[in-house]
Length: 564
Image 1 (spheres, rainbow, N blue to C red):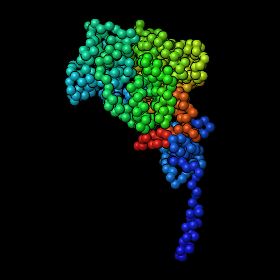
Image 2 (image 1 turned 120 degrees about the vertical axis):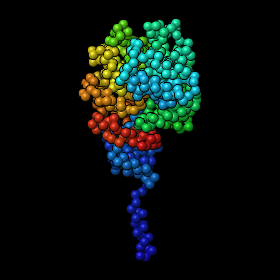
Image 3 (image 1 turned 120 degrees about the horizontal axis):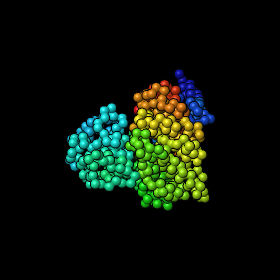
Image 4 (image 1 turned 135 degrees about the vertical axis):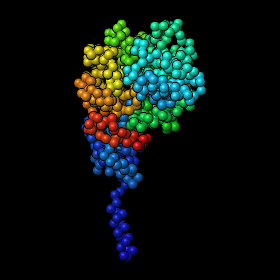
C-alpha cells in the first residue's frame, strides 16, 4: 500500500475519533443500580464526577458526553450505588479506643469478660490500668449472681488482683471496676453518693464495683490521661473502620478542645477525609464560652470539618435503669432513673447556644427526659425570637421512649429525633422488662409514627455502644427484628420504616440534621461526590440478605477511600 493511501486512512480514523469534551469528567460510574434520593430522578444509569462534585447524573449516554481520554471509567458490574452514608450519632474516638482496649461486645458471659481481661493482664506490667468496653449483662447467655441486676467485682478482682480494671458497660452509662481500681480511686463503703449517679452497694455495705451514670467520674479521674500518640492511633483506626463500612459523614456526639484540635490536624494534612460534624462537649463551660463568642466553624479544610452544635445530657440509659421515666420502672418499683445534668443548666446552655446560632443536641432516652427537653426547647424558641436562627433544627439524641402526647411535638417544633435503630434490635428483648407492654407499644422506638407526623429521623449506631455497621441499623429499621432474625414478624411491626425511609435516614435526612442537605445526602449535580457502593441491592434483596451485604467501595469527594 502506498504511503499516500496509509496517510489518508490514518486521517479518516483520526477525524472519526470523538473530540475531547469542553468539560471533562474525572470519573464516570455506570452499569449498576444507582439510587439517588432525588425525588425527581430516584434511579439513574450513570454519574459523572468532576473534582469533588457530581458533574452529571442521568443516562449512560449523557454521562459519556463528558468522557475524555483521561476519564476513569468505573464499571459497577451490577453493584449498587447510593449516596454516601452518614453515621448520625457516634463517638469517633471511642470507636478507635475500643479497638485499642479490650472489646467486650461479643462476650456471652461474665466469665468470658473476666477471661479476656485476665489475658490482657498477663501481657502487661502489674499496676497498669486495663480498660475495656462493651459488656451487657442482659445479652449474656450465662449469668452470675447479681446485685441490682448487675455483676459484682469479686470474680474480676480475684482473677486480676494486681491491675486496676475499668470496664464500661455497652451503653457507656455504667461501668465495672475491680478492687484495685476502687483502691486507686479511694472508694469504699463510706464514699458519698454523687448527684445524678450511684455507687452500687452490696448488703455488706461495701461497693459492688458498679458505678452508674455520674458516679463513673469517681473512678475515671484516677485513670491516666490518654497520650497524643494513642489519640492519633485511635483516630486512624476509627477512620479506617468508617471507610470500610461505607461511611462518608459522621455526626460526632460530643468533643472537647483536645479532640477538636486533633481533627483539625488530620484535616489540615488531608488525612481526615471523613465529613465530620462535631457537637461540642456541653459539660465544658470554657469550651462553650469560646465557641459561642467566636461562632460556628463550617466546612473547614475543603469541607472535612464543621463545628456548630452542642451535646448535653438529660438522663442515662435504659439498660442501667438510668433513663428518666415519668412512671417507675416495671422491674424496679420506686425507681425512675436519673436526671444526670441539672435541667436548669441545660436550659441556660440551650438559650445561649440558640442566641449564638448553635444547634443543641440533648441526650434523652426516657419519656420524662424527652418531655423536659421538649419543654425547654419550646420555651427557648418563644423567649428569644429576635436574632436567633430561623430554623435551629434542635435535636434529641436517642429519643427512645415518649409519652404519646409528646410525639407530635417533634414535627410541630422542627425538632429532629436522632434515633439509632440498632438499639431497638439489641434492646427490645429486655426493654419490655423495664417498661412493660403498654409503654413499649405506646411510645418506644416510634419510627413510623414520627415520620408520618412530618419529623426527620437521623439514623446511626451510637458506636462504640454498637458496632459501626450501618447495614445493621438499616436492617433493624426495615425489619424490627434482632440481628438473629427474631421475632419473625418484627417487634411492633407497624413502626417499621420502608427501605426508602431507612435510606433517607442515613443520607438526606442526616444531611438535613447537619444543615447540609444542599451539598450532600443525595446524588445530584453540584453536590459533593460522596458514594457508598454495595455488592448487593439493599433496596430489593430479601431482608435476610441485608446483613450479608458488604461494602465494595467508599468514595468521598470523588476520591476512593476504600475498595474491597
